[in-house]
Amino acid sequence: MIIVTNRIRVKKGMGAVMAPGFTAPGPLDTTEGFVKVEVLLTQNLTDHDELNVNMYWENLDNFTAWRNSDAFKAAHKRPEPSSDEAKKESPILGSELTTYEVASVKEIAK
Image: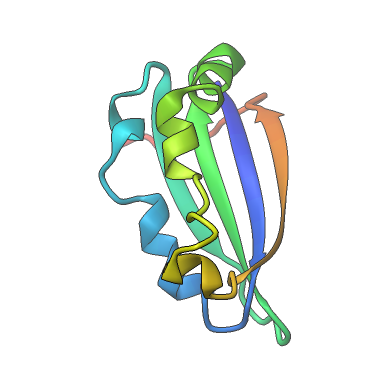
């Protein structure tokens, strides 16, 4: 299993507003190899918010296929330059993508 984390810095106050969008129903739900997504909001930052979007995948090939898919491109499409939406300033200040291989897990037995 791999975890792909997108660390996204956004304007202060926007983290909680944006978080539900990453877990809303959509094409990711039926993508081969997708396991789950969780969104973490970093605490105690003063000048911006930070979201860590952790996507769990069965393997890197499944994530790569999603990243190259038309559904991914549609989900990340920017508004047309002439639209009212394009005139709004983006709340995103920057982002960084990191991939991890799950090396060890411990869970409480139920």
